[in-house]
Length: 435
Length: 115
Image 1: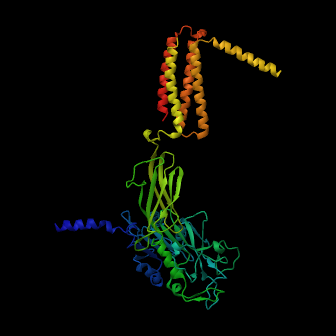
Image 2 (image 1 turned 60 degrees about the horizontal axis):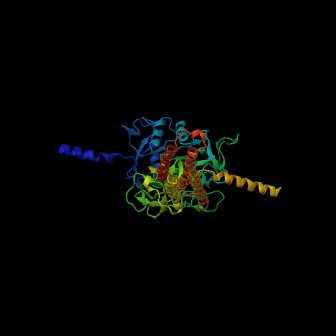
Image 3 (image 1 turned 90 degrees about the vertical axis):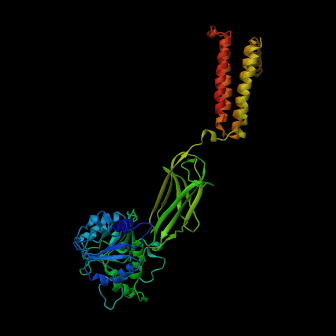
């Protein structure tokens, strides 16, 4: 009997054992961290600590550990993956390029960092995410105008950048005052790919070349086309962060002071910690993750959702939208959420009013067209997960007895019809009896 | 020239009137009935031009009842006219029965369409 009880308890606990990001409980998430070298764990500990303090469970593994695997029995073991292994040529275990892409395709998040002499495998993962690293393996981003001032002159590969993406959702409301230190390789993003965003761009004077050799050919990547850190939000709302520098995550650059060349202000602490912490918040869905619930629609003044509308009905539509704040679902407030009443093309497009508590609502008249319509909310804003709701609803014409009758304007027509009938009657009598 | 035209017109009118007075009374009754129907139709079209075509089905049924009545009456007139040799085998009673039946069908349709 006691065995049976234990079994039952285990069965009941089974759902809580799955770790994937569910919209209802996006906490207690497990992240696999793949490292080149165990020493990274201590040299980048500030970054890892900030994740752990936010409730993430980090599992550190060497990238060539033969035991690593992302899934077991078809279930993913982790909700996020951090690749701090720029030089790895082949992952250990069952992890390879396809496994990582499948991981992202199934809606999981990825932070990857390349570095100077990044391996082909890392470059391929980046390419699949829409980011091309400079092909020259020895190339670094060099900037002779906005480098970090140090005691020695150096080769200007430790550059500073404050060209952040202008989005409060991605970088947090608090302005990043100090510039970010960066030493690594640059990449370019495909302008046709709207899913990739440059989170941190190089200054217009930067270029990507081998700092040790003389520049013989014009560099392939120049100016602010160079992206230092890029983010991707896939169509399935999986988020990816791609950085060209592993050292920018390190404790040394987190704690280092920064002074931009040509500028007299010296910041005590670089912007790296704030920038990367806020960015990792975004990547791991602690910000900008929207959910829409309680979609409802009904005739004005009625409580129940009808199975069908009639043309020219007055209807109300409402939806609740919440944003995940890292700990709870907070009402999402915006003025630009729109609903479409859609059949091949939108017949009605209305901006929803909000009560500032997450409820969005509107009322409109069903168009004078019958057919199978959809209520559609397509909400795509920079940094937010895309919302795409659609609900099908048929619209019928008037029933035969629903048309207006005895219209005043039509009385002359009624009169003439009846006078024709009376005329027919009188004509018949006159015609038959006139002899 | 102008005077002679007026005269001609008057002469034509007189000859038409004297010729028409020879028409049998039953045909004159039918003519009167046709004129009544056509006038009613014209009045309705004028009314529609003023107030717009909103209850369009009502307008159509009102005008079509007049037009239909006129057409059926003209058909009756053709069939009962003694001088028309084409229908000399058709007795006028039969022609009138057809007319009544067609009118019933017409007004049934009009009532349904009147809205």
